Image (tube, rainbow, N blue to C red; front, top):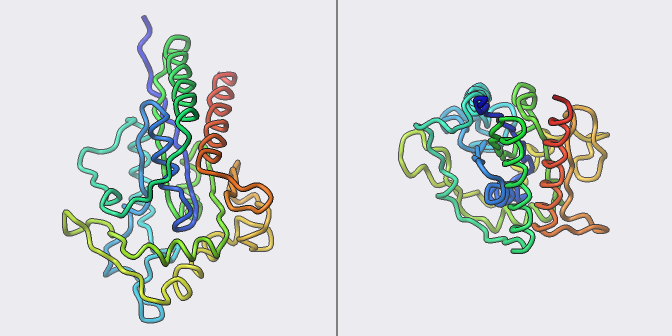
Length: 261
């Protein structure tokens, strides 16, 4: 009997702060067998290395808010081994989580679909599929990181919706560099206007035609980027709809990979 080979598929789940990307990642993890989540936030540099803008520490600047070489090396480890390093600690579970369930029938149906895909890959191709789900608000800034991703999704949510969600989320737990618990960060009153929004627009302007981050069509900067717009007026999407759409793309990717062998 041939030896089972591990095939790691890295899935990018990008979007602005409070766009729903982490919630989406967790729903996909519940559906996809052999899946792990990598939170880009865990790769923020020590706070003393962050720049000061308008009198505030800037946790959002695309060129310095993430330690991209460390993230890239981490993704290479996941791709090569199909696992998270034993010494990695994520601070995500310390943040307040929003409960946004999906339809139970949908979850059951998709879970079964990917179980069958997993079993078929093992039986027909001697391949064990591992899914790496990478969520991040600056996922499509660094070209090396972009190229490591096999599938790329971007959640685009209206700016007013993002603003309301961000201002309602009072406390963030930042990356754990010195303590087990991480450090609590509370946005100053005008942090959205002075730091978060300008950084988001700057990080994504090249992804959209005319630098129109809210309404523009995609450019060719990020190859194969799948744009998902939950808040678009003519086609509102629930979290169930978003999960269904992503799973459809993931199925097509696996089938295309199989036909290209």
